[in-house]
Length: 338
Ligand code: FDP
Image 1 (cartoon, rainbow, N blue to C red):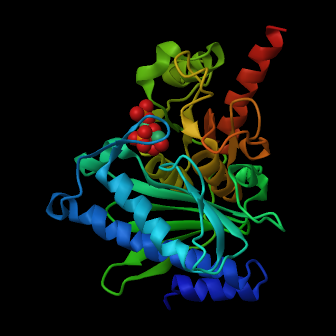
Image 2: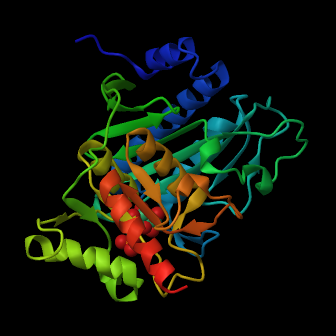
Image 3: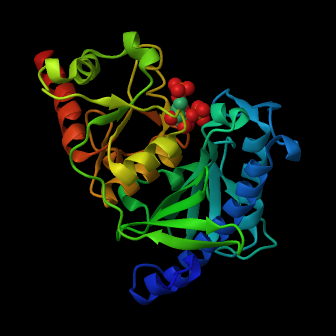
């Protein structure tokens, strides 16, 4: 079979009218940066990249050396390309403007440079997540408010998994496609076109250690899954939790399942655990494009009007039928309390 490189694929997408040249260039630059991150991740202890950086990010979380390195790689790669108006990252309080020395483009890039930090030092898959928006016209200075667009406004989203293989999964709103990094040749090669998530599944991903802090509808839903063939669902379910969102979502995009990071009593005030702009929205775009669903347990993630660059939300995504069940349980529970 003739292999198709990412560059060829992007040319095809341009010809199909799905993307313009600037967006194509942006994706090429992000992919190139992720190849460098992949090399750094793979070096592990030999590259001196493991362990804490000794700093905290905006969310007060300890930064790993690889968080900081990955952030710098993505910033540096994107600054001079001429395709961005600004970028924003989990690791930076405020958006980073494009230096005056470089031409500016029309896109805004948001990213979580290295998701799944707790897995870095134990040689388990981690990843990069990114979301691309258009910058509003006639902006002299890009500020955080210009990024606060609904997920439905995304023009591209993707993630890269640094696992046994390095994979790039991408959507422009015309299906979801997977590229595998050919390490010998240094290029991403199309490995799956038009990925689809089956509507039904028997696999769920959630951190069960938090169970006692969940809301009642979440307790009900997972309780029924655990009861399996002896409960109301009448069949057994299996659980998988990598604790790297990218790896868990990739399993779901590959063979179905649901990924849930719900509200719980300890994180209620902050709105949830995962970040809307560079985790939930890009993953929701990918999952919906693959035929799945993504909600907060109550409403569609991509329909939310963002209120902050680092805003957190509850996340329920994956196989459509299951997301409908758990979302219905939340809405029924809310109705019964009003
Ligand atoms: P991490 O904090 O390690 O970066 O993005 C947050 C995230 O990882 C997700 O990748 C992952 O799914 C989740 O948090 C892990 O949460 P737990 O620590 O509760 O398992």
